Image 1 (cartoon, rainbow, N blue to C red):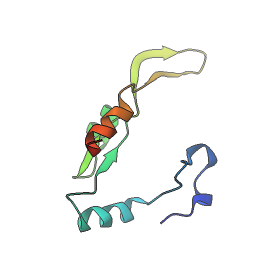
Image 2: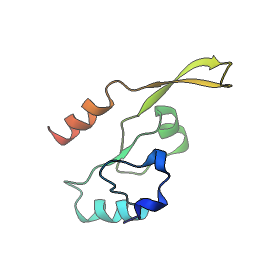
Image 3: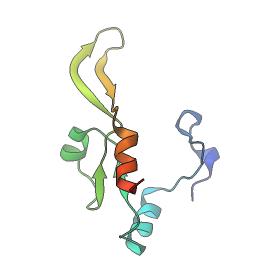
Image 4: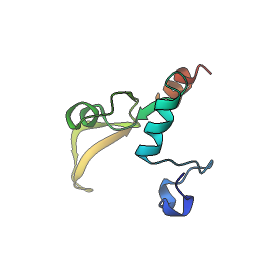
Length: 92
């Protein structure tokens, strides 16, 4: 497991549970029925950049094809169904 101090503060979670890609893959290989690998990138990143064979895409947000001139970047909108999608996956 990755030490929480290695994770940037803004990316830390309250549970403090972190694994790297290799550790996640080993966990999935050991228990494919109960371990889910979730890819939270945008659908475009998931499809066009590539993803793990087992990865389910539940995006944390979506890029709107609009430009934010102030920030000089595309408009990003959080996925309002993210938490409920994770909960459905877990069956809770």
